[in-house]
Each structure stands twice: as structure tokens, then as C-alpha cells.
Amino acid sequence: MDKEVMSWAQQCPEDWDGRDQYDVFLWGGGRHGQIAQCGKGVNIPTLAKSFGRAQQIICGQNCTFVLLANGAVQACGEGSYGRLGMGNSDDLFSLTVLSTLQG
Image (cartoon, rainbow, N blue to C red; front, side, top):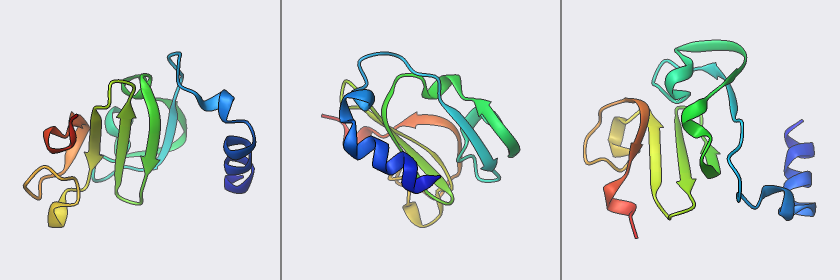
């Protein structure tokens, strides 16, 4: 499935241009907050309304980053070792703007 999605994104970038608001569905383990308001463990795709304005979403094992059209970067998930760029090691259970990456 991942190969098919990546192939689609590369072959049809116009489908991914981000001019509209999208429905974003997330699932998986979320014990560190990486699936934001969806919960701490979701076994089926669940609508994540806070991700609807995303132009790009980068999902890692324990954290998620969102790029908005205005250039803002948001993050949620495991903060250990400063991985979220917030200047601390706190986990974030909702999308939070990274002030260090604005502009």
C-alpha cells in the first residue's frame, strides 16, 4: 500500500497540491500523542479534523509533523531528546505550532 501511495504522489502531484481542505484519517498506536486527538490507540482509520488544513504530513513512528500553506509547521507526539523542536522533552497530544520553524 505504501508503494502505491508514494507512486501516486510522485506521478500525479496535482492531486496533492493542497489548495483545498482535506479529510485526513489516522490510525495506529498513539501512546505518545502522534495521532493527536484520535486517541492513544486506534485500529481503524479515524478522521483527524485538526489535520484538515495540512499541505503535507510527515509521520514517524512516535511523532507527526504538519506543514500548512502559510509555512507554519506543527508537531505532535513523543518529545524525548527534543525531537519535536519545542526546546523540551514533553510529549504533545495535539498539534502545536513550532515557533522555531516559522517563516
